[in-house]
Amino acid sequence: MGKSFIKKTSLVVLMSFLFFIISDAYPLQAQAELDGVALIEKGEAEYSEGFYREALDSFNRALAMVQKTNNRGRLLLDIALVNFALGENEKCSETLGIYVNENPGKQLDRELYPKGFLQVYDQARMLIQGKIAEQKKLDEQKRAEELKKVEEQRRLAQEKNAAEKKETAPVVTKERAKVDKVQPSVQEKEKQVPELKKKKKKFPWLLAILGLGVVAVLIVLLGKKKDDPTPTPTPTPTPTSTYANGVLTVSGVRYELASIPAGTFQMGSNSSVYYDEKPVHTVLISKAFWMGKTEVTQGLYQAVMGSNPSSFKNGDTYPVENVSWDDCQSFITKLNQMVGGNNFRLPTEAEWEYACRAGTTGDCYGDIDAIAWYSSNSGNTTHPVGQKQVNGWGLYDTLGNVWEWCQDWYGSYSAGYQTDPTGPGSGASRVYRGGSWPYRALDVRSAVRDSSVPGRRDNDIGFRLARTN
Image (cartoon, rainbow, N blue to C red):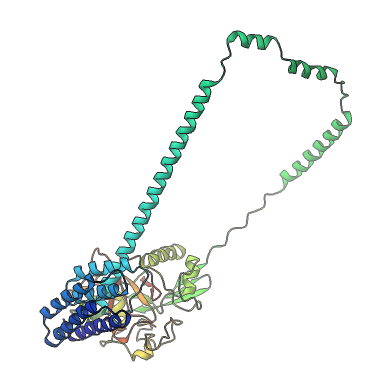
């Protein structure tokens, strides 16, 4: 466990404890959590796993003393965080699942927790939400089956009543029916009398002549209409789409791509606090490709898809966000159909980092405030694309503003030399890169990685187009 992570774990748990003392006067629970915090501090000072496990026992004792309240929610987070610090991700995920299930509407303050812990939290949250949706679907199916059963019972009851009425109806013998047929009833006789007394009407010759005249006029008019040419229906307008030499235009919306040369670079960071950026390894990008100069804008997304899913609808030049990896694939499929071919796509993770670095080897390709919108300068919102300093290959906002989906499944790095890597063949989550407006500078670097399930949407996740030459 890294020292910085232990300090952060201690800080989060200590904040939780102080809030616990202020909000509720439960001395036994508070003492149990206080014992846990003290053990965390000892674990930090001596790097002892034993202290962390004793702290875990103390937090579990405190948890057993409270019901489903805010105190219980904070204790669950403390237990999950200590399990994460001990490397027991399965127990961490299980505890976070309980927390999410009991607190479905709450969101974590993402600035207080390590990125790896937040990844486990996001996956647990998606899993619980999926289970809730599945249970809701099962409940709806059960209600539908019960309603169908009630309708069937009602139908059978109606058929039974009809059968009973039929059995009790009076029986008419053949002889009686024959008499009724031969001898008309009094009512029928009375009905026949006025019919015999009706006067014989004259034939309406005047109306017949007028009718023939109307028919003749219609014949003349229809004959003329037949000779007239059939009018051509007005075609439904379709979006006009063109692409040439790095310039894509869809219904008047322009999107430019930069040519990225082939080459090698060192992928990852050995100095990072995040394990998934290690080890640094050499990667060859064997063929040149095109990369969007900016993130896909709301204007371009609207032009292609006919809708705008963004949370920050501030203008066409703002990056589209609140799009999942699956949404990106739908957009790309439709765009390729409009332009022709199958060349537009998401960049691979290796292509993304190679294009972001643009030949640089540090954490960023320039001063962080000059090149990126992040937590210290974003004002808690996205910004129009292309306002910050460009990198060496003509790309804007590869760091900050919104995270950018990549094509790859998320997986660990290997140390060997690689040529055009495309990530694992399968997985549970897809990669996104670059950091975004609510994240601190530590998480807005060329090497930083994050991932989530392909269906996740958030107001700080967008994408950038790549294109095969």
